[in-house]
Image (cartoon, rainbow, N blue to C red; front, side):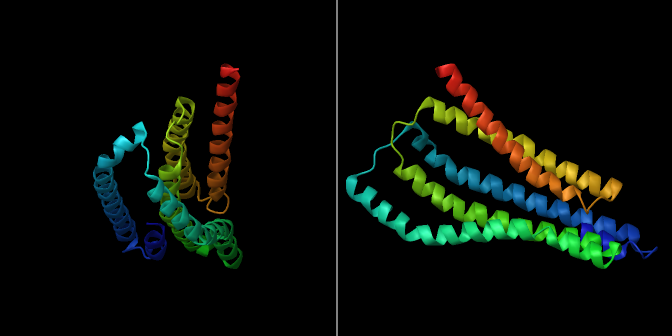
Length: 207
């Protein structure tokens, strides 16, 4: 949406078409994403019983532990790549703004693309690692841990869409693409802070 709007904004005849094409493309991608969420959610429904606890046979558990050990270097490399991409992605905004302020929206588009690649790597390889962790964890998961995971999920559901809305609003309305990217690291810090505060308060209540 940002790229098409920027390409056509200097063309009086095509400016409205650029915005419209960008919006259509955005909604098409959102529709595809929602369809993928629904499809994946339906496929995962059959594994909900695992939340109640389970016990793996010893041989299978040993095989999974060996498989996890072999996967560890891949996960470590993906984690390093994700972090590097996230750290370097704002450089596109600074670089394009330094060359010419008119190129800043392209820098923002590149920033979002690189961030999207980093998020994809995080989700893809993180889900594999999470599967190993889930299958190999002790069967007696405490209610405290389950509640903590639920709280983290609620925080993420609210915080990250809000951060994205603020990013897009300040960008399109005020044109502050040069600084509004900071909302994402701030959201990350807030997410971790809220989770830690919740954990500390829960431990205090228990004690």
